[in-house]
Length: 159
Image 1 (cartoon, one colour):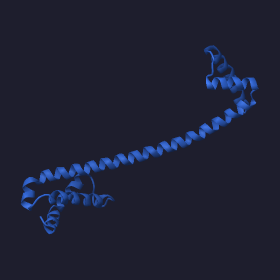
Image 2 (cartoon, one colour):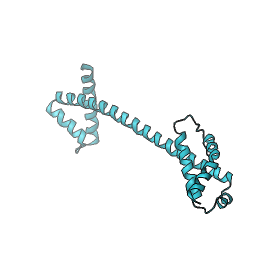
Image 3 (cartoon, rainbow, N blue to C red):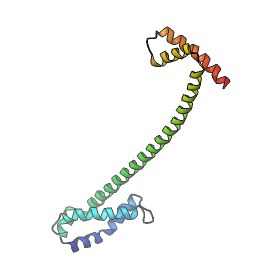
Image 4 (cartoon, rainbow, N blue to C red):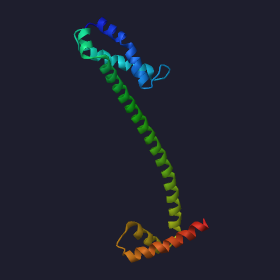
């Protein structure tokens, strides 16, 4: 088919494109309507371009087959778009959570640093040993935790 015949074929099937879009709940007033309509025209054009004549195209592609073919294309595109939007929203929420977590962590670290500096040097060594897990028995680790838990609670009441 030549260019003019292909354009005429696309114009003749214009109502099919509108039916497909209506079935997918995409209506003329919506933002994406023209984009989807143009994509359907291009898809139809590329499919029809493979055939030598209009009759050959219509024999091999009845109207119900073309309707389903175009319908599933639009459904797939909507799914991809929805998945991309969801992914962007999820990434945005994760960034917000990370930002909030960073502030909380910074506040906790500042509080811990203040607490650490108030300790005696011997207690500071115990804290370092606890944090690095450096050759401490389970019993000592338990005692250190209890000891520092009490000290930290006293410190937080004071502050």
